[in-house]
Image (tube, rainbow, N blue to C red; front, side):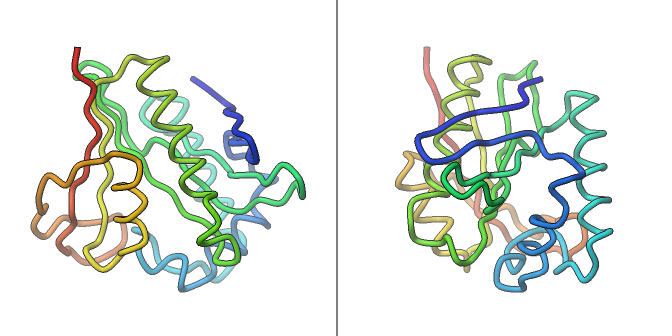
Length: 176
């Protein structure tokens, strides 16, 4: 499984337990977690547990999550990755989050573009999906900017810790 991707300004490195202080800082911000399928973290051990859970999924080739590291500062500014794979059908679902102080500067677009490009070129996947809450206008704009297409509403889809709610489904398809 891939452990690192590079962009012009970012390093996407598979999460490590040593990333927990930086990720906790991000995941404890209610504005960041508002549209995530987890509740706002209140203790750093929650970040450690999340990293360990994601590592277990990676070991089973079910998912992989990266810490987004700003190359110039070395600071962890968010996370992104493949939430689920279906290699038999050539699909993956992506997810991402970014520290509020880095919003609106093109970092999410840069990180997500790297994920999509790698999955489509190296793994030869045919479809990348993203699920977005209808109120998450910034994420919708990002996906549209990157060429994702709105497919419809997943009615009452349930996140890991949240009550069921409607989600928009976006995808990027590669045709042969």
